[in-house]
Image 1 (cartoon, rainbow, N blue to C red):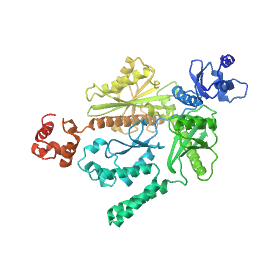
Image 2: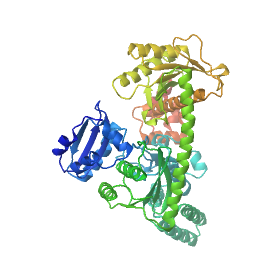
Image 3: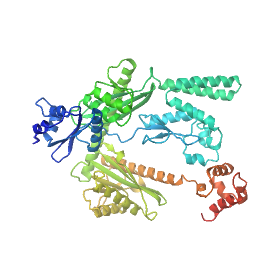
Image 4: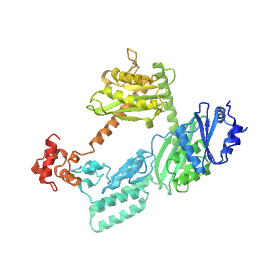
Length: 604
């Protein structure tokens, strides 16, 4: 039992709205809650009424209660969500959402805008359409934009340095504005049509394109009329596939619970179009009811993104009216949480519920396998406890240049992608993989010592004894000795299943059987580290190549660079041209021709 003097504390507690934090003996935050009336809400925990085992267990551990008084109830809900994220209390429902939601992004400040997938701050310049429930649904929309309206998706650097159309033009997915095959006005019209489609105004668009088709046919412009005909047919097919009866924006939120775990599915409908779903697996203490789960999820989820006009749930969540008021105020429009549904919406909710049940079943099956992998890994490494957190390092480079080290993180639920890190390596002799590995580990664990993240139980190093020795030395210098180090050396012929696990202080490597669950877990983590390292290196290399060689020539502007590329077909051909050939190009003076020639032929 706690020695907390609840009566003394409650006697002076205000009736104002606010947030309360229940703290344990070591000042760890056990629970964060919101209240319209702090005194009434906190008093309920210490009244004589019956409590669930979960609540009683929490109350028994309370040693102190802190409160934050807020001006409004809205502020209390927002502050609660912020504090739950910060402290991750064990008795709260915790929404684990490593990724921001994706959008379709239309760039600006360019005569020929591009459409791309985008994640990140909504303050980015340009127009954002979404959010979409998954990157797959964004890619499908982009594929349609390229097929129907032929809007470019290439980078501005790629666009600026084209001398001839790329493959996208050949397969009729782009109109090649980079080489002047379409006017700025015509391209803008295509962009405007794509925007109308993304905004859900497809019916008006189809009618307008149909009128253009008839006008072109009347003028005997049959090729243009055929193009409009194909656009109309494609738009109608898409609407038939994606459109639901009725219109409006709403989300369907369903929760499945089994074996002490929960899955929440959010299915999104915008402008009558089903955009697909996304599954979440919140962490919650045992005994959390579905009503409590829905209430906690809706509060945390929609405070991070705008809520649609309607949110449809299986049953009425706790504090529904409060949630509606706060989410509506944040979204800038009225938000209704509805749970009594009929006809089409009821069928969609049944589908979302079935999806949640299926996802939870797959999750439980996967966790059973993961537990078996962790248990065997604990046994083969002679660990006292089941490992809770594992990290793995790998490196990637091209001939020693632009080396990047990756750090991936796994816990008992799988990959923790929000904790992944890249390290761009500097000041190392090209090809010195040992020094690269040491620098990355020193940088990572120096941050961990400062409290950036928890220390891992196991640190996997993709490499043999040489790389492992660098990790051992780096951790010794940092005076870190509680981490189990393991080198993962590729076996004979680099065939999967023949890996050797190298442990510090052990002369012979551990060789697990090919079907070992522990080996499969190590392989999974090692492969993910390799993938992430290669991805980071390609990004770094790509950034270094975004500047064309021609951009390095002082005084050679974008228009003249484009003229050169159009004339010669590429940078390589420009580099081979003589001064006389260069000087024949519009805008290139003889002095500039000499400068360009010198850039390629005099050691630059």
